[in-house]
Length: 336
Image (cartoon, rainbow, N blue to C red):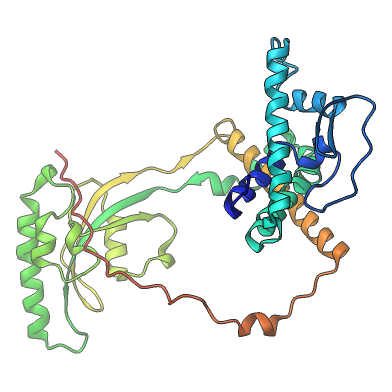
């Protein structure tokens, strides 16, 4: 039987994933180690390799043999042995075919071997990681402000752009037009929580005109994070009832009208609500710390040198990413 490169690679990977050819054959087939001596108790021989009774028992345990009803009769044990023998035979056939020297096979095997090493070293260290109730409570106390959701308001706006240096007549015309928009917005009532189609008709703001003028949420105490006109922010702070409108506002670059879509009060979340998430976060942080220390320790042990200049000189193998023009967002659904 002659194996193709892909078939051989799958055979080898299957053997290692199932427990490793070395685990139940007593030698690493890929490295062509000297043939081992026959163990005192063995259950199968594949060429000059043996599956010992001890290795077979270990494989039964790995496959759940310690559960009630597993591997109680010869049929079950024969099925397991047939599987191990078949996998071992595939590995030996793959070795004879020469595909084990192919780069993609070596790369795949290296990855499997590395993963097995990590499972036997790093995973053992990570299993020792624990987070106590005191750790959770201490973290909550130190980060209580992070778990308090400030009051916030969702607002919509109309904007008629006017240049700073524009004549007074231009500002007056924009103001009159916005007054007309305000009168029509008042008639929307609760049926439409935002500006609806009025935004498309009146607003010059490209980011919001196709979604009813909705800007999004404004949280209390975060004035510095918003990029729109300060007049809009101040007007939004003053609105209380959903659906209410500001007066027509003059900003630095145009005339505005603001509407409150909805609001939410300040909310504090309790330790009981957050304990599970905090524990998970602390556990993940500590697992990453263990992994980071493992990586640095490993690099120190094997001796690693990186040539930054050589890395920088390597050109990309593909073209740069293409940017896709963004489509206008969908209009929010009317409520009521």
